[in-house]
Amino acid sequence: MTQQIGWAGVARLGLVQACMGAVVVLTTSTLNRVMVVELALAAVLPGLMVALHYLVQISRPRMGHGSDVGGRRTPWIIGGMVLLATGGMTATLGTVWAGSETVPGLAVALLGFLLIGTGVSACGTNLLVMLAKSVPAQRRGPAATLVWIMMIAGFAITAGLAGRWLDPYSPERLLQVAACICALAVAITTLAVLGLERGPSQDQGQAGDARPVATPVAFGLALQQVWAEPAARRFTIFVFVSMLAYSAQDLILEPFAGTVFGYTPGSSTQLSGVQHGGVLLGMLMVAGAGLLSARRPQQAWARAIGSLRGWTVGGCLASGVAMAGLALAGLVGTDWPLKTNVFLLGVANGAFSIGAIGSMMRMAGEGRSAREGVRMGLWGAAQALAFGIGGLLGTLASDIAHWLLAAEGSAYASVFALESCMFFVSAALAWKIRLAVQQAAADPPPPRSPEPRAPALQVAHET
Image 1: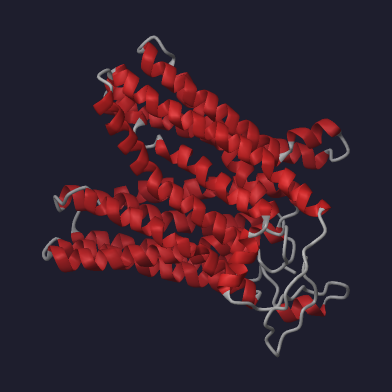
Image 2: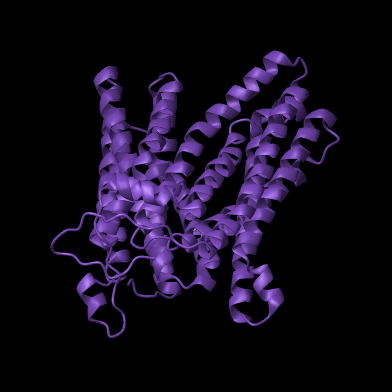
C-alpha cells in the first residue's frame, strides 16, 4: 500500500506536473512558433505534430497496466520524464535541422513528438495513480487543485523565461534553452518522487498492512475487465464528452470576439486571459469547499459543499448555461456582456475540471483490485483524444456553419449551442456514474473464470 502523504508530498508531485508542463509548452508553443515564423513552414505541420502527441496517448492504459503489474509507480514516473525530456530535445534538434534540411529535420521532429506523447503517458498516468492512492479522500479536491495550479505555473514560468532567454533568437540559443529545461525537468522529478512510495517488501512487512497482490494478466484482459465495470465505462465516456466540449471552443473564441464584437488581436488575447482567470477561481472554489468539508466532516452542509460529484455535475451544467450565453451573444451582438460571460464560463470550467479530476482519483481504486493504473490510463487516453480532436472539430464545425449560414454571429451561435448541449449531456453522464457504482455494489458479483497465474505470485484478494 502506498504510504499516505501530506501537503508537502502533494506539492512534490505538483512539481512533477509542473515539469511535465514545462517540457510540453516548450514543444507545443515555442517550437510551433519557430516552425511557422522563423522557418516559414505551413502551420498545419506543427499542428499535426501536436495532434500526434495526443494520439500517442492512447497508450496510457498500457502504461498504467505496467505499473499495476510491477506494483511501483516511481520508476514509471521517472522513466516517463526521461522519455519526455528526450522527446523534447529530439523535437528541438529536428526543428533546428529543418532550417537547413526540411524533410529530414521534420522527420526527426516527428520522432520527438512521438516520444513526448509516450513520455507524458507513462509519467502523467502513474503520477495521478500515486496521487490517488496516497491522498486521503477528503483532501483529493484540494490536492488536485494544487497539482493543476502548479502545472499551469509550469506553463507560465517556462513560457516567460524561455521567451526572455531566446531573445535574440538563434538556433544555438534554442538548443541551449531546451537542454536546460529538459535537464532540470528530469532532475527535479527524480528528487521530488524519491521516497514518496514504499517498496512492495516494505508494504508487506507492515503489521496488518498486507498489500493486495492481484494475479498478473495480459493487458488486453485487464483492459477488458476494467471496461466491463459500469462506473469506469461511464466515467470514460463522460471524460471524453466533457473534455471535447471543453476544448472545442479554444480555437474559435478569439476569432468570434474579433469577428462579431470587433476585438483587436490584443483585446481578444486579454479575453483569453479573463477566461483563464475564471478557470483558476473555479479551481480554488472547489479546493476551498473541500478543505471546509474536511474540517467539519460531521456537518451535513459541509459534506454537501465538498461533494466532488456535486461540483462535477454543477460545473458541467453551469458550463452549458455559459456556452448557451455565448450562443445568444452571437445573435445579440455587441450589446451582450461578453467578458462577463467568458469569465463565468471559465469559473464553471475550472469547477467541473477539478471535480472530475478529484472523482477520477477516488474512482481509480473502485472495482477490481490492482487495476488502478489501467483505469487512470483509460480516462487519460479519453481526455487526450478529446483534446486532440476537440480543436479540429470546433474549427471544422465553425467552417461548416459559416458555409451554411450567411450571418457570422449565427454561424458561431450554432457551434456554441452544440457545445452547450454537449456540456448538458456531460452533466447527465456524471450524475449517473455514482448510480452505476451503487448498482454494482448492490448486485452480487458474477462468477469469475480462473485467470492465469505466475508461479512467483499469489492472490491476496480482489475487490
